Amino acid sequence: MRACGSCHRTEGTGGPENASLAGLPASYIVRQMADYKSGARKFSGPQRSPVLLMTAIAKAATDAEVQAAAAYFSSLKPKPTIKVVETDTVPAIQIARVFYTIAKNGGTEPIGERIVEVPVDVEQFEHRDPRSQFVAYVPKGSIAKGEALAKTGGSGTTMPCETCHGPDLRGVDAVPGIAGRSPSYLVRQIYDFQQHTREGSAGALMTPVVEKLSHDDMISLAAYVSSLKP
Image 1 (cartoon, rainbow, N blue to C red):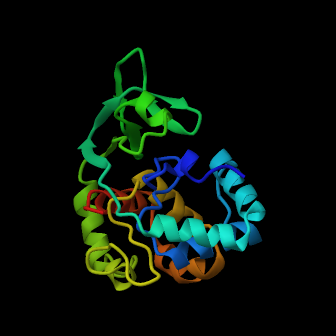
Image 2 (cartoon, rainbow, N blue to C red):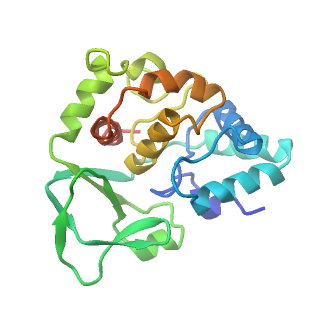
């Protein structure tokens, strides 16, 4: 199987195309590997190579290998790698396999209703450097709207995130921390929970929390959560 660090980086920092693993509870990592292996964790959109690869790795890995990897990544301290910027326009972008980069020809484009997350130094990122930094462009007003949803639940739209993820959103016991993580990743996971393609024990807990969220709600929550210190 492929080494975990080839995608998630040796220090667990990850990138927009996958997840940061540093500091996640070991039991949570083990559970997610089991969900990939059983088919309980899937992806709602067109099949992406990271998801297909994770499924194949989970099926190939032994229990001992999963436990060893989980113990290693859970022992690492999360690092701040993302700067969240509110804007109406973003640099023109292009797709580089499974993530966005700033277009070589320059220019700008409206952000619309989306998150545009790009590496600051593409070559550094593609060389799997765990020191890579990212800029996540989000629509203006997203952070404040997301903070209101995260802290109050938005009058029944959802529930306060701290109920499960802790007052600083850095996790509690086996519940993972979400503060400072990739907003692109967070939106994909919220959507997968809402579409019932990410099931297992996490799905049972998260599905009722996200079922009423709109696309704009997802973007706003991710923008706020990602702006926090991990």
